[in-house]
Length: 283
Ligand code: AMP
Image (tube, rainbow, N blue to C red; front, side):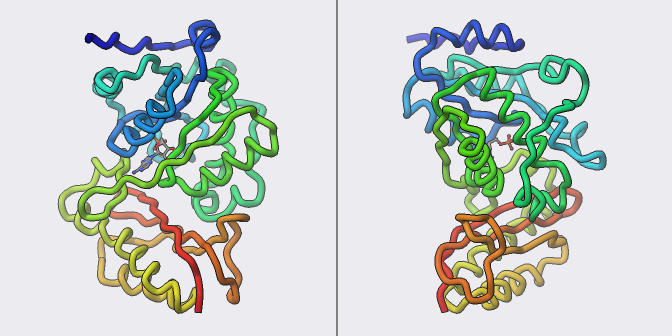
């Protein structure tokens, strides 16, 4: 059986009218340059059933002035070909002008206190920009379910909070982190790593593994184990290594015991990478 090529929706009006009669829309928001991490989200969406819409939009609002917006990888035709082969019926790919017709939005969603920690501390305004575009996508596509990856754990926390606190009528589905055979979390930015950097980048997931193996000895042991692993890699410049309470996403206190998430961000060469791992703190 031939699968029809995905319908590419480029305007807000076009998306609304194409999707309004569709049953149970499931949205997978992406910035394109798709890889197996994204495809795991798409597969989950297809499994849930209904009408799958993959959005491809590199959102300028979530990039800082000195970040890699212009250099962000783009491979639209290839992305659409793969989505076609997977059987995705709709791709929403608006231009920047379509999403922000009057320039940068005057009105933004504020990610609040947690939005200023970890990624938000290193990338001021990032989560306000990300939540603003997610709100717009939810209002345009009106899905019953939206799918995100655990790779961006802080984003998942903030999106869930926004959906709860702003009463968006949508369920959130979260897919586990997809890694390569060395443990490196897949990312669109990995394509900018050369061979030495790719090898060095494994230190991030190795540090998380070391952290997880020390979880029964408490938070100090967790941090020391992760730092010990990173110390051996001169190409990795650590940005942050933090342990958060998954319920509040605030840093855990010294005496905390229970589920936690270890968050890491580092620069490998000129490429900024993030990763995380859930642990249970004891000790
Ligand atoms: P991005 O295109 O980087 O904005 O990512 C789009 C979605 O794919 C987000 O929900 C990410 O968390 C998710 N994602 C990206 N990389 C991975 C990965 N390696 N494993 C699981 N999900 C991922």
